[in-house]
Length: 332
Image (cartoon, rainbow, N blue to C red; front, side, top):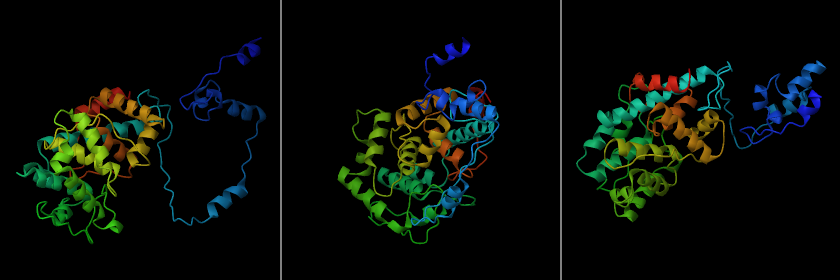
């Protein structure tokens, strides 16, 4: 009788839009494991693997030169959180909280005591030159592990009014650079042309005076879709301009697109792939930790990176209050 009742049970869909019993991920949380696991336990035999096919795949060369980087995760220790349903290890959750806190400390520092060429951009009396300085800072990216992380940016910095393009040859680049040496100055040429079409950088970035800071951010992000200007550069440029007080800009979306590193990290953390739900879950996490949504951009990027990108700031800075809020929100 019990078996007949179980067979008539209404199927349940999981977060991957499959029957939960058939999902290789979610079925692990069912009592006794997945049906496949239970079948294997009853038979006492493991499913055979096609060793010859595996060898063939490993030995086949790739004509396009693509290299596969294997991403490592901490061991599943039973950790679960509704805010980050893609995480299965408390160590991963702890690292995420730490990186979001670092990213939030960076935002605070940019607004209060910006270092290097960030300060040059903020203090520049002419907004066009300040905007250009901020663009080059983000585009080239501050160096890591340097006494002077802004050295290359100062070396490349030119006057906006002169129309002179930076000499980018043999320039050392930071870890989040958008510059591709194969393109030369193509991206910066496109940026100058974009600003000229808008009347000026100020007019192109600010748009309509009636726009809210979040709408201005969205419209500027869309308009900055220039050749060679990556999602990360567009997003960080607008965040930087807003934090420096040059423009009224505020992100209420992470602008997750394509195979960008932040987008890929968000899919891992939030356990889902479609953009509307990714954005919704990212917003819920930022609200739970009480940090601006923009903090999740660098936070997610650093969570997935081999080592922390500091972008010109000391690696040791942290918003301790945000660290604690992150731990509380994620139940670490």
